[in-house]
Image 1 (cartoon, rainbow, N blue to C red):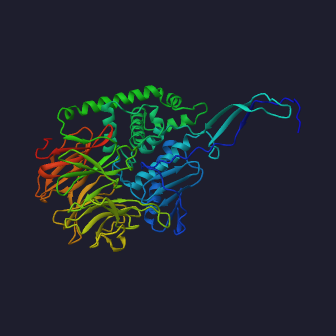
Image 2: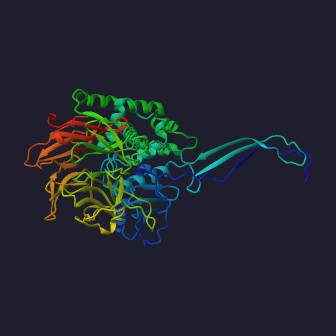
Image 3: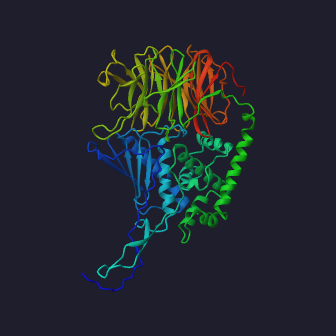
Length: 606
């Protein structure tokens, strides 16, 4: 076709449909979600309330019913704060077909997905999982909806400009493209720190999430070191574990600062400002709603918290008791454990990796100071066998036939450097050996409740998979969302010490294997965790935030006041006892977790 030299308009501006901006997934875990499966084996059911529709599969009914009640409870406080109500009922999808803890709000769809497994993450405190995650995700739904400039069916528009060079032949209508410009325009413009900050702040007085010791720790160490994220860095995720978690923590801290200084309704006023025509960034919204620029707001908040932390930690910095550093390369050096012969210290390390979930076990020779990395793929709590031949840990090994990812137990043969599978689809984690090496205690997960489980090991551990010969049973029968953490045997093998939480902080408990009775060892308003008995069974070593900072303590089983063993500005966790009064622990600082070692024969006066 010969078009001659007819001139055409080379400058074309067009709207290329609507850009569907990704729904915000406000998950609380530091690694990616699993690949998606249809799970045809599941039978799904639905329950409906005044404002919500909850979909759940068999095995997750308790979680679904509790969720529905919480969702109705928080509906009015959150929608009133933002003066916004969804145009349809909110649909909730409850999942318990993976050992995975997360939540996601798809606010353009009026849909929220919740996983039933309670969160246990080294950078987060302990909260009632459903109260926390349901209110968090519903706040996302309402705050983002209230900040939206257009209707729900219009997430954004996309403008594109194209230009072409002059045609070179008479039979060619256009020349080659030589200019291209694209401008996506989102109808919701909310920085990540504000979205996550308001979702944690929620509404004054709800108490379903609160400023806990872990959050305070993360901000405190960065403020003292002068390494807080800038306001620009707070705007986006795309960082390693610590950086992304700081977006959450700094966002929450700044949102609290805004509410305390500009009124409890300030989050709602900011959402209204972001909804206004012509307001396309937070700076304009801040000027409109708060009467202050974004830069001035950030500077005032940063100075306020930095001055406060410096003042409150002055006496601690003058009297530090933190031992010597064994390892601080990498952001996650965790769960130190002395070998039974006292010659080595094993711990999980993510050195060279970006995320805490990318750990491997490393051995440290106490005499030579040499580190030997292993291929044992543990990223959580693990334990030595009494003879020092094996390490036991939990991990996930790909999807099963239905596409589910469950936690299972494995042994690592230290000498042969090989892995032995102990369980299959058992949903067990946080294992520890009994003193005789014939049993394990672990944590079992189902429908949002965690329970103690006892595992009987077979006589032979030869081969790569002995799961058919392993027997396990639950010791407790909690079905109310209760959580248990890091169980360990007493030296006599008759008792198990662990931490337990219901609505908030953890307390220390003891389980008697002969009677099946639970006995509280230490219960207070503070958070107590990571307990273990001394080799002689006379002392319990543990971690507490009783002073507002996590430190190591011990108490005598005969009674008396707890004795402080460390005095740090960051946090001390996960103690392990070695020969001659040695204590190893995970210490949190500006760059993450490191391993420290000190002598516990002296205590810290409070």
